[in-house]
Amino acid sequence: VRRLPGWGTSRRIAPTRADVALFLVVLAVAVVSVPVGSLLAGPANTRSARVEGPHGLTVLSLDEDARVRIEGARGELVVEVSDGSVRVVSSDCPERRCVSSGAVSSVGECIVCVPNAVTVTVGGERGHDLDAVVR
Amino acid sequence: MTWTRSSASRETSAWTARIAALVAVGAVLGLVETAMLPGGVVPGVRLGLANLAVVVALVSLGPAAALTVSLARVLVVSLAAGTIGGPGFGLALSGALAAWVAMNVLQRSRVRFSPIGLSIAGAAAHAVAQLGSASLLVGTAAPLGLAPAALGLAAFFGAAIGMLATLVLSRVPSLAPARVGPREVRARGAQASR
Image 1: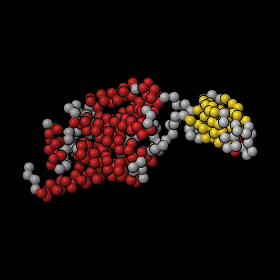
Image 2: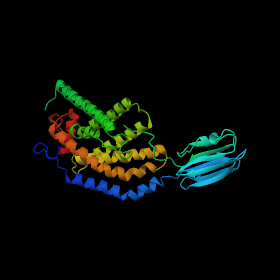
Image 3: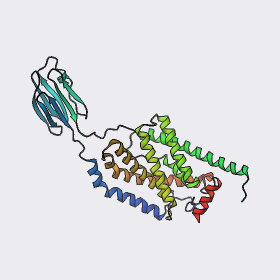
Image 4: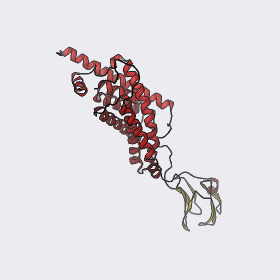
């Protein structure tokens, strides 16, 4: 175990030259790795709405607003994308539970219309939500 | 110097007691820090107050003591927080181990680092290891994208904790480097200072 520089003679904080060099190296690595970091982080939002039903599969990007008509088993649904979330605006079904489900936007959330056999699922990369906290 | 059995065991007890005290300090500092900064500025970046205990242990009691303090602290805090065995526990463990390895390597190197340098290295290694193992857990490289911000902050936080460690070490006589510890630790210290 090495003695502290200045131990016993001075109580001032005295970083050695190696300390300063290390500090600068770590900072430099941080600055240099910024482009690599943003590359790894990737596009922040690559979410999409997957509309599946008797008609097949329609994929809508959540980044741009859109309004599409979907042919269901019993009639027509209108699916709308706005402000990064998706909802069913209207549907030809008895209870309209799909409409009252409201808008969904997080990856994995879904809206289901049973009578029309249509599902709307938000798919894509997980966002930066915390799923573990380190203590 | 001749060692009688009683004085040797007394030395060992003193060494053990100091390790235990540092584990307690580290655990409390870790909890204080969690309470102060919930979530943190950038995920994976922390002030690293708990590393203060590890740096002090490394400089005054040697690498074995530092490893003991570091692992025992992680264990105690995970047990208290109920995260033991979970993904967070793996992250904390990887960070603690990486920090210990980095600080140990720097302390053994021929270049002269003060606790400030050791602490900076520990903080940087801690951040990179946590983000790296988070990437492994998640299965994508996305968490590593936070590495630049984490490293930049680690340099500053690490330096601050290192300065604190210097102050503690110079003001607590019983933690004077190379003055305490069982015979083998002292012998190793004597070799290193040669």
